[in-house]
Every structure is written in C-alpha cells, then in structure tokens.
Image (tube, rainbow over all chains, first blue to last red; front, side, top):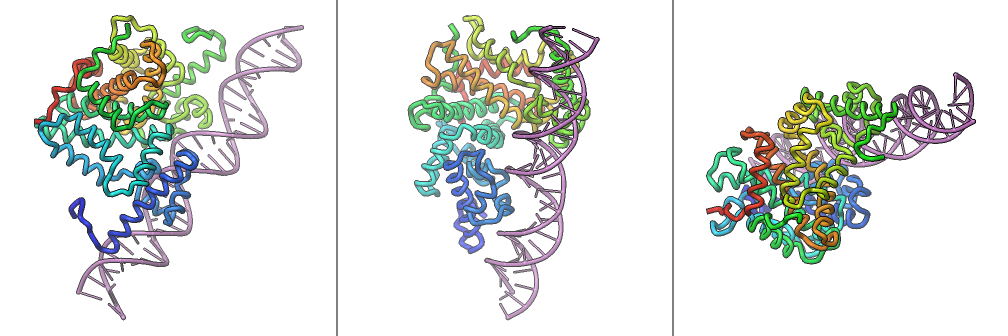
Length: 204
Length: 204
DNA sequence: GAGGATTAGTGCAGTCGCTGCAAATTTGCA
DNA sequence: TGCAAATTTGCAGCGACTGCACTAATCCTC
C-alpha cells in the first residue's frame, strides 16, 4: 500500500497503464485541437477505453489533461511535511513545480508535451486553477502542521501558499503571452520577489 | 454610453432591474440550499424570467451568484489606472475588495447577503477563482500601463497581481474555516504580509 | 399616436460533461 | 478449475449551457 511500491500484480499494472494512456491521449488531443474542441469520448477512444471508464480514472476532463490525481496530492503533502528545515515554505512550493515538470516516472516526450500544453493553452487556465484549490488546501494544512499552529488559527500559512501558487501561475501566464525564460527560471524569480516583499512596486 | 450614466430609458432601467433580480435570487437560493443544490431554472423562476433569459444576463451560474459582469471589470481597470501615485499596487487591489463588499449602488441587505454567501459557501471557491482569472488579466494589463512597461515584457506586474488576489482569496478561505476578523481586516493583514515579504516563514 | 425598426424575452432542440446503477467481463486466489 | 472481488462497460439520465427562430416589448420618427 505504500505510495511508490511496484505492486506488481497484473491488475495493478494495467491500472497504471490505463491511467497513463488516458493522460497521454488527453495531452495529445488537446495539443492537436485545443482544450475546448476535445471531447471526453475522443480521449477515451484514443486511450482504448470506454467513455464511462474515462471517468473511473479521472473525475473531470481537466484532471485528465493535467494528469493530477489524489496520490499526487498526497506526495506533495509529504514533500511539504518532510522538507529540510533550512528551506522556506516558498522554496518548497517552487520545487514542487519543477518536480511536476520533470516527474521521473514519466518519459521525456510526455513531460515535454505536458509543458507545451500547459504553456500553450490559455483556455486551460480555469482548469489549472480549479485543480490548484485542492492543492492549496493540502499545502496549507501541511504547512500549519509543520509550523505547529492549529488548522485555521492563523492567516499566515494560507496567505503564503495562495500567494506562492498565484505567483507560479503568473509565470505560466507570462509564458503564454510570449514572455521569455523557462518555467523554472521564472518560478525562481517570482518566488524571490515574494520573499523580498512586493513593497517596491509603487504606482508612481 | 458612459459607465455610470443613468440611461433613463425604460428599457435600460428594466435591464438593470432584471440583472439585479437574478443576482438577488441567486444569492438567496444559494444561501438557502447551497450552491450545488440550486438549479439555474430555480434562479430564473424566482427572478421572474425564463430559464433562457437567465443566460442572456449571466454567462454562468457562477457569475450570477457573484454578480460580476463586464462593466464591473472595466470599473476595476479604471481604478487601477487612476489610483493615486502614493498608493501601492497591493493597496489598490485591497481597496477593490472592500469596494466589492460595499458597492454603493446596492442596498445593505444584498451586500450583507453577498458577504455571507461568499464566506459561507466553500463550494463557491472554484467559481470565485475562475472569475478572478479575468480580473487578473485586466489588472495586470492596467498595472503594466501604469508602470509604463510593455505588456508581457516583465514578470513583475503579473506576479504582484496574482499574489495579491491569491492572498485575498486566502482571507476568504480563512473565514470559511472559522477564522476570526472581518474580510477587510484580514485583507489588510494579508497585504501587509505580501508587502513586507514572505521570507520570515521558515519551516524550522 | 400609428407604424416600422430595434432590441429584449422565450421556447425548443440539441451538445457535452458527468453520475448512478446493474450487467458483463476480467483478474486474483484457493 | 471455480468462486469471489474488482474492473469495465452500456444505459439512462441530470443539469449547465448554446444557437436559432419566433414573439413581444420598447423606441423613434413622422
């Protein structure tokens, strides 16, 4: 039952393959036709499963494209809980982004496609954000635990998490509108801004 | 054609009334039964229009509940553009939140209901965020103009806007999970955190 | 104030995302 | 092999949302 176990039963392996096949199909189709023009039936068909089965694996079209599921969130929760003490909360979140784009369990081609789709599809923004809400809650809770404060007692942890994720999203949107730099570089820059304070952004 | 004109034709007045009636009906019903349990047909019925007309006024159930439309965004754009020079970008955004909760064109009861629904309805979070994406784009563009940088050239403006809106959302979520303080107070605290920098949030 | 031009409101039919349920199929295990 | 458990599938259906064609209200001009 451990998260990274091989679980080498046939059943378990096929599930993993199907999960990936759907994600891969979703990414391919979205890259080809755009998010809105792709129907869940198409994704299911390309992945070789029935339309109904699609929804057994992912709760929404969004999540199939993004490829994020419950276990991934659990992973991120643990990352926040077990981060080294010398790292700041902002740093951890920045690192999670990098990891998403370079998941070692995925082949290079899929990772690159993921990156392209995420950057090239503005209509994906709502989906992305929606997905992030859950993540925000998880990270906030983990951060609270980590800091030893009661859940919901302090405003701080939530502000840190939401601001950080918002800043990361800013990087993605910046690339979407033609900005330069890799996501990782931009994320580093954004996080540095947050860390140093946004005060030096006057209107004058 | 100016934004705040009375436009005293009967047609124009009725449109305004219907717009408000739908928003009001949506808020009431959501407060009574919860966002997911309310159907657009119900809202239309209570507002005294046909189900089809509902969608002529608001593009989605979300937006009817939040009561935000194109003109509101235009107002916020102008607010950012015309803000006094001694105010920081963060301050402006904080002020926009207060204004949303105390719109002078709305009666007290509606404003209070708006506040209650926004705070009491966690399932509204995705809708809220979705709605915020558009706002983020508008404010980013306005801030860029204000700072005199080319649109999309710098990462900074986008980071400021996204982080600020994320922080505001943190305040709302904080209240949803039982935290103390008014939205305005919390927003002030959050914005101060962002201004001073999130560095002093280590994990140790 | 009648009459034609605009514009808003409505009904209908249809698409698509998503869900519950129960039958059919596949896999795990004894 | 044969039974139990889990997975896949089809089906029927809900609800958000849209395009279209039509009716009704409002506006404007004469």
